[in-house]
Image (cartoon, rainbow, N blue to C red; front, top):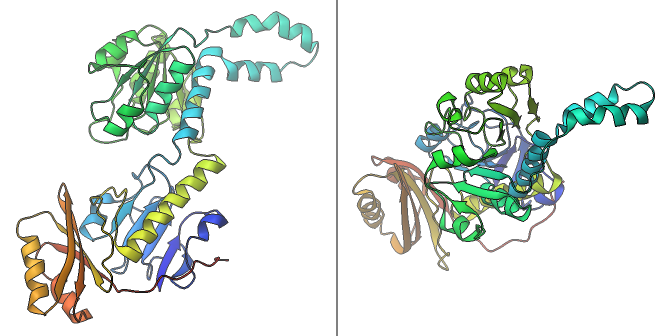
Length: 398
């Protein structure tokens, strides 16, 4: 019986994915949990028990999780890429409209009209005139799950779209409209764009990605949108450009104290993925990935270990080994198993960066002592045994 700690609300339909014969659900308790399902809670300072095997993030961003520490402790961290992409895409275009048409300012002004509403509206509306999106140039930085949707939607709205992403996947490249102009020169995007929208993760490479140096290359009055992550725009440099008029407007889904106090800024309270559909999609993906790992050892969409999966060989027990990506690890494992008369029926090994995963289907007597001995080999982070069981029906969890 696996214990899963819930650190966020999950739709009832998604909870039904946990078989009551296989899972016990607990709330915000990690001492005996085999897995955690979470959303935005910061767990960097949380201590994890040796029993914890996996953390599933209901959402794409994982900067609230200590990824490297989890890897060193043999804890697989999953996220849910693409599950909220449409929601973020739609909010991006609302942001584009708000940056063009001064919609928020006009609504605030209208609410303060105390009398002669119709006459006052007709006299005052001219101060809120703004440009249409059609015919303008949209620069999309990051053509991943969200960015390629934004680029394609921009084309459909009659915008000239320039995309930049040196790491674009084959899948997203194939999904990109032929009318999107791809550039390998980010400076070209800066110089040509009337609107720039960011859809990149936060990392050392993207920290302060937008700063005073590249703002100088942009058109006067450019509108900049950030619905990705805090820290990829230097707030001080942006505010200085807003004050001077170099940047005409900024829309952020990641408010900070500085942005809230700045002029010509619309701050949205991190609503990018806040739709019923997106929350359900993210939760379902997170739970599915977590249960697939705990029940079968298969890894999909991990941020700290490679994708690794194998169909189960009938009549076998399954051993999952997480280890450092160093020489002779497979040799150590196979030798250790052979010394105990355990026969390998099927095996897959995958690596990514500093870490690797092995799924091994075996026949022969396996006990805790043998697993412990295997886990003590240098470079091995975790050994997990999944015994052969008949499939059980899924029941509702109340």
